[in-house]
Image (cartoon, rainbow, N blue to C red):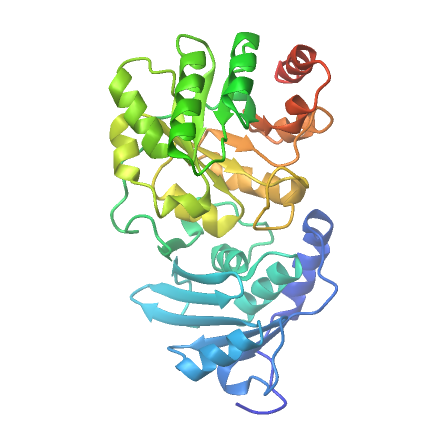
Length: 376
């Protein structure tokens, strides 16, 4: 590597155009990003540096980039497709994209990649945007077919699409995410369309008792009950009861997907909803054809530790535009309240999830009535 470094060729006009049109939508990183070909990267790297390798990178290079908290993108040609391995402090993603030309890192690709990073997208999402950007286009990418497939951490082989989970209606309506079965028992009589039990405990007996109570509360009602995380307990209870068990589906976070038996959930007939926080995660989950996607966190939230910063309405709109034709049932999540609910729904989703808007309400029935009315 040269000590001073020579930056990768970039289409400066395209970069400036993307930034001019989308910085107000997504926000702008005040620190400039630098993109370097591996052979010309500087001796000293930092968190705003990206190293591009056309072909396999040696282990010492991978370690050096990681030690600097920089980004490494290794691109290899496989037939008519690019296989990109993106390494950053957020982990390693391997993404499979159609090749528009013979150049792994064209000046246009570098321009869009740099712009996406400068618009606060993490490296794996920035790669998705850069590969999906149509040559000569001025529009933000929204054609699902142009976006990469996920090879790692894939949930299913990109070449063997999984059977779909049982579908959800596109309008799940008000979605109340509650910490205990007590709350489910309160909300079902108030006709909340969709409820979720998000009970946190390592005690198996406590978990089973809460799931059974919530299921019994929802049984025979109009409320759709999802069980968060405890998929095995939910599947077993649903199988034991048969017919209307009261459980409508399972909700899993990204961290739970690798551990869950997705085939068992699918075979049970229960629906599956999954939380996503950006392009790469949405693409990963779309391959298993879930019943719904939860998109967020849109606004700041204190109910759980989020893996990313709040997405904001600009990102939320771009995610809905991309995913609605593929998975019609979408849920806006993260910091949603009575005050911003209409803004979320106006983007085009049929559901929005709330927590504190109900749990911190002085008059729960009135709060639920007001929230339900926003869907009219």
